[in-house]
Amino acid sequence: MIIVLFGQPHSGKTTLANELWGYFDSYTTELIDGDELREIFQNKDFSREGRLKNLQKASDIAAYLDWNNKDVIVSVVYPYKEARDYLNSLSDDVKWIYLTYTKPRGREGFHVADFEEPELENFMQINTDNQSIEEAADKIMKYVE
Image (cartoon, rainbow, N blue to C red):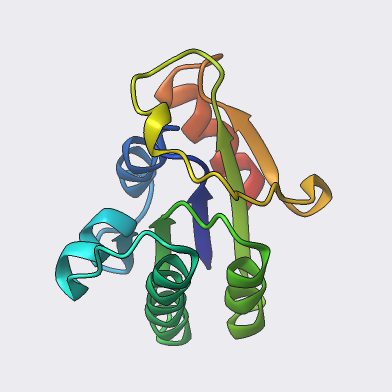
């Protein structure tokens, strides 16, 4: 299973991914973080093309781990429908959790201007302003089980 936490920067993706990781067996579960991938692959290109390149790598790694019977928790912005569709084409066991927030958190200047909103019938949406990390993680676990 691949659990994808996606949304604008500072919506709680990495914090929630780390919380969720505690619900799984650490020997059979891997975390993929978009910021860490950018460091590993030295991709500092935040254009659409640069983001798509980074997202393809995240998707390929997640699918490879999934094929090898690992659970995968991915915390990446995933702003484009084509990138989400690409991951869906690699695995039929992707659970998408769209994280949003409305209260200012100081990183709004890093938002992806051309972020394509998901079709919510295929996703779970959580506004991280309205609940604790534990409450959000419990909701996600109920959704993915």
